[in-house]
Image (cartoon, rainbow, N blue to C red):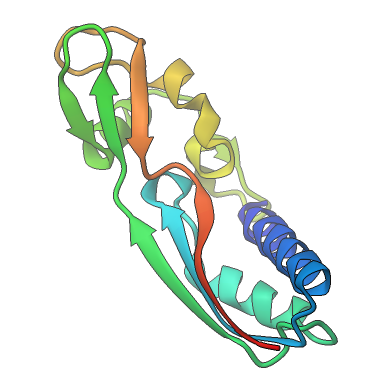
Length: 148
């Protein structure tokens, strides 16, 4: 199950960049720099394999994929407390729900659905669920090197 997450993200990335290349008249994308949020718990090895498999026959074929993990940062809107992914993970790990993987292992639901953070996490200082994930919850392209 976890692998499907990485494959679907890689597919969305390749599809989006292929459309971009076609729209902009780009013959080849040489390098793609991608930042991914710590909250996503991305298995970079699987993501890289999926990307390499999907770029065949596209303007991305042979391109270099550069991945950079972005640390998660949470800010409580009630009391202003700031905390990191380790604290959020402790909360989810201490009795939170788990997703059963194909092999029978258990996985955090945040891996597949970072948007669940507000349902699973509270401010460690005041207990509020009213907080903002300031960074570290998404995947985005930071830079694309192209040949026209």
